[in-house]
Every structure is written in structure tokens, then in C-alpha cells.
Length: 475
Image (cartoon, rainbow, N blue to C red; front, side, top):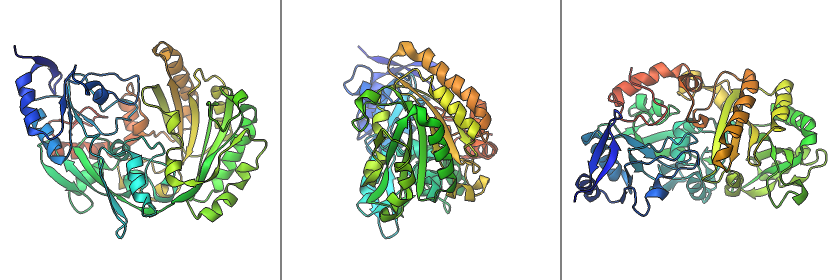
């Protein structure tokens, strides 16, 4: 008896994928192939956001570029819908799709550091922690995000920002080359000198143009120790604390990145037990300059009012990079809205306080993340991530456990966003767009670059093979 699996074509038609067809793929790959019912299938198909649960027809866990090429060619041969998984951390769950062939690169996690050139080559399955650990051996760091379990590929292809962005720009601004498997199954190099149009499109235009299998990052002298951490106060202190944040951020050196947030206090050991679950306001700081200057730079935060908790200290950079990991565990339900801000106004702070008081989940937060500095000095057309007028990111981060609480939490996020988006530059961060965002939000994220991106798409993927993303159709 010949077994078949339900699959989808690139156009969305349902077809039966025969076992012998998949067996042919397995023989051509080094890595394993899983289908529903196999041990390993559910682990591979599962992504970070628990709200996303889709069932690919098959999952191919690639061990190298040759496997990636084989999967792209196989999908083309059989007209299969293809989805691409790196770290699987995207909030919209773009790594997975019902009935697709999932190309899973999560086993490709090699990092090679050239300390003389100050460049790291990282495979596309790497998490931020993989790159940070290897680069810190040499006292160097790439400009990455701020949750160490995030995949580098999705982060970078959508722009990327973190604690070093004020000094050196978007993550994508600090990429010098990428290895890319194209829609026809070829392997090309994308850089300013080789295929510069493709390179431009990959610097924040999302995963539209090919499968990026490796990324070369510029590295900078950071660590091994920084001054970083969080100081927290009761929410009753929010007007004064947010004013402190507004004032300090406006004059902070680029070595200092400041983040303000309001949320119910987590059950963290550094916070008093009687405060757990109660509303707090906090400032997170990371000073990546000379460690001996760090505590002086953040002294006004540590001495402000009567904090209920203070873990703003000298710490290893790799520890700073994982400080927020516990707030975003895999499998929790997430729904966000975000906007770029030109500054922090007093009226915005008042509304943040008002809506934070209504948070329905112990895990949700309203966050203000500082960005201004290097990214503002480049022209809008430098890369599709654009948004060179952004000085802060506002993220209304809904997070909860139970599916029956979806509507309550989503409603809080949307209501808060609708009341705060008046303060936006008009732009938003493509990596924070949820599954239900429409074309107008892609326009807000990519702006004037969309027309040029469509031309890049026409050249490199005219059949729109790579479509399970924030899709830009060929011009």
C-alpha cells in the first residue's frame, strides 16, 4: 500500500504527495525528513508563538547548503509550496505553512570569526546566542537583537535592532555579504560588489528573494563586560520615572541604550515577593562603552526615588543579551502592535500609563525602546528597512497562556495601539507585524522601497516561489 500525504502547490491547490516521491528527496539529503506522525515532526514544525499551529506536509532538516539547494529544486520540480524556518521566532509564524514543504535550517548553526577583519560568518540556523558566544571569545560583537533565542536570519532580513543599534545602526546596516540559494536552485553571493540589487533587497526587505544560508556581519569591540540591567519602581511612580526616561534618553551618549516598560511584576527573584503580579514601571539600560564609565553614566537611574529592585550592574555582554529571554518563552501566545516614534512626548507617557493599568495578562507589557543615533545618519534609500527618522520603537506586547483569553488580550493590544499610534512617525517594524496585518502595514514598514523591491523580486524570483513571508510580488 502506497502512503500519500496531503500537500499544497505553490498556487494553493491541494495534492497528494506520494511516499515514494518523498523517499526520493530523503535519498538526496544529508539531513532527515519528517512527515506527520514521525518522531521529530512536531518539534520541527512548532514555532515560538503558541498562537501559530500549522502542519506542513513534510519537514526537511537541512545540514548544509547542498541540502537547501536540493529542497528548493524539489519544491520547484513538484510545484510545492515552500516555507523557510531559521530560528522560528517570528511573531507571525512565517516559518510554517499548512501543506508546505518546510525547509528547516535550525541545525545549521556554525559561526566562524575572523578577528583580524572583524567579520563573523554565521549559518542561517544560528540564534543570536550562537553568534554572541563565538564573537565574545575575541571581545567582539555583532549588532543583533536583545533576546538571545531569536534567529539571526529573520532578524537580519527584517532590519533588526538591539542594544548596539544606537552606535552602529540596524542589524542589516552591518551585514557585508550573504550566501543565497535562489529560486532556480542556484547559489549566489550578495554584497555591495556582487549582485548588489539582491543585496539591497535583503537588507530589510524580508525573506522575499531567496534562501539566505549564511550571513557575514561586521564586528565591533564590545565586552566581554558591559554595564546593564533593570531598575524597577511601583507603577505609582510611573509619571516621574517616564519623565526621567524621557530626559535621560534625549541626552544619552550612543553607548547607552535605554528602554522603559510598564507591566505586572514578574516572579523574578530580584523583585520583592509581595510585588509579584503588581504593576511596575522599569528602566532597562545597556552601556556598551568602557565598563569603568558605565556605572557613572547610569547613576541617576540607580539613585532615583525608591526602587523596589535594582539589577543594573557590571555583567558579561552575553548575559545582557539573554536578560529578557525568560519573558518570552516558546509556546506562549503572543500578539503585538508596534510603531516607530520620533521622540517621547509627555502626552504619550500619560497614555502609556493609562493603558498599562488595564493590562489583562501577567506577561504583557508596553515598551519604549531607544534607537536614535547611527541609523538616522544614513539616507532613506540606503536599504529597504528605511525608517531613518525613527528614534524609538513603541511595542505593545501582548503575551498570555490560555487560548480562551485570546480575544481579551488582543482587544487590549488593539485598543492601546489605536490610542497611541497618533505619536508614530507613520512607520513600523516589519519583524513585529502579526499574522493579521494587511498591505498597508507592509507599506508602513517598507515605505518608498516597495517599488524597487518589486523589481528585485521580478529579477530573482519571477514565479514568486518564496511567498510565505511579507510577500512582495514581482513588478
